[in-house]
Length: 247
Image 1 (cartoon, rainbow, N blue to C red):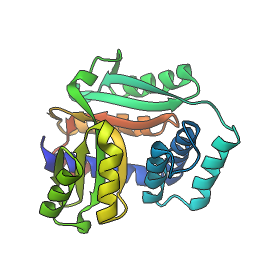
Image 2: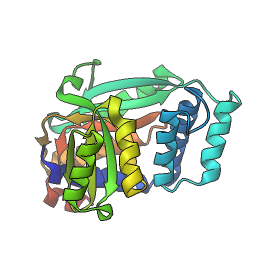
Image 3: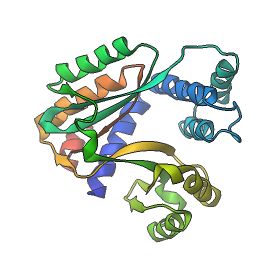
Image 4: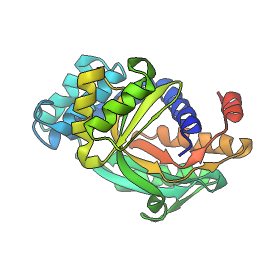
């Protein structure tokens, strides 16, 4: 995979999310509540909750917000969310996978469909694009925690499958089943990770031109604006010069 361009795209999306801090906190809190409901409300005894809490902390979400999200699950409050995946095609023929947590499938499907149609894309059936991706674990660390050789060696020793480093981050890939074991080993050695999640990793990338990139970013922003959308994964590659213009 073209690691350099890949991380430029990741950083662009992260920057867009940072501008919507309150919305990001709401999505992180929803994941914490759902994770707490899925098992014990103790991060030390619930691997999914531990990951959700760590991700919230990595985004500087206040401790009180995290505690409230856990207590909401303990008290049986809040809606019963279910995970729903949507797939579709964006500008330039790129493939997109949209992961959501929703209490109303019809509402969420309508919002996602509208975002695609307004940006020159279209929805597909489940399975229409996911075969072009690998469903794997992903762990991000700041570049400063280690040099690329040290991170590569530590990650492989921990059970990871691959490491890609650039000027911003180290990104470690592993199987979904090994995510928590790899995470624990690396966090124990390097400290807090920037994020830990299950992702859809594209097997190949499609390069988009400037007009396509503008429409694509409009689509991604519209999906981000949906309260129900947790993550969006795509096989797009935006060249550095175009990213600079969009930034």
